[in-house]
Image (cartoon, rainbow, N blue to C red):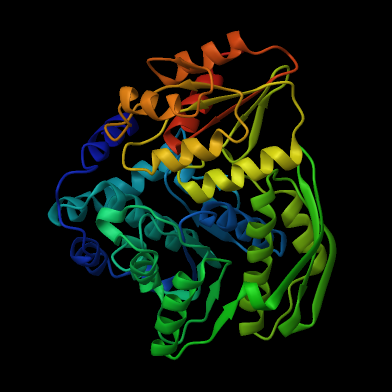
Length: 429
């Protein structure tokens, strides 16, 4: 079996109607002597920001001299993006070797696509002897395949409506599912979120009798400045009597300030568990060298083209806030491609606050929103719009519409962003 055959095989295991539970992945891990229990994991759940926060934690730990594994999902272009060791993607050959080594057990327990990806992360990180494995949940938390890992600290970034058929139709129900990553004896860090969600998670933390830390109460952020290529801010962590002045980050976006502050807060708490303090220069170095694609990423000038994987109302709110705070342009053209199970009406309404013109398209996914339905919703904004059969045709149409003084924003789904990144790898527009 070669690598492409491997990808073809595991992609066939996506979706389906198999019940979501931990039985398959647990049986698989038991059969290979439980590498996940030999890791020290930072386990991260949440609706938005968990990928960015994970990448920031990775960068700071690496700058502090640690051997770090990072497992995130979904990938934007290449499957290898899901597995990083010390900020570098694991090679296709190494991924294939790990799969083939344990293929008989993946087959025996009929594991799903995500369970295979999680199993690969566990075996690769264990074999590489990472000091810390940063594990991002795929969906929810309680029944997520990553939830079998041995955590030393858990993080929940925020809560918004998502996957309501699986996680529940209220914020409290969704929060309760994500709070499933809470484990006895393992401290919890909470990002800034709505009160109902926060209260649900705090109640779960109290029931487990664990120490929990609220960013909202313990972290003060001030002196915030934004640019198109990054931001700066100062922060105080009151519990530890720490102040970090003028921290510079290489990620654009108003929301990235909160993701980075949450990551620094988590690192400080993590180090305190071992009676240590992180090196301030390493924190600064880590914040300046974060590797994370598809989040308010500038991919072209004249016209400016930014891509952002926002895929729910909270994410779109953060994107709109960033556009208003950071960029100047004559006209903003928004290219959208959204999945059908999202709150499309709210997302489009919020984008219409800044959009002068829309281009609507369909990402390459079985879950993509129906183009006619998307058109009807965009019509209600009374903004000019254009229709494209697919994301790449939409990109070409947006470029035709834009002058050098205009800006194009491509958003609505990580699938949409991924298609653009794959396209520009091989084309120069």
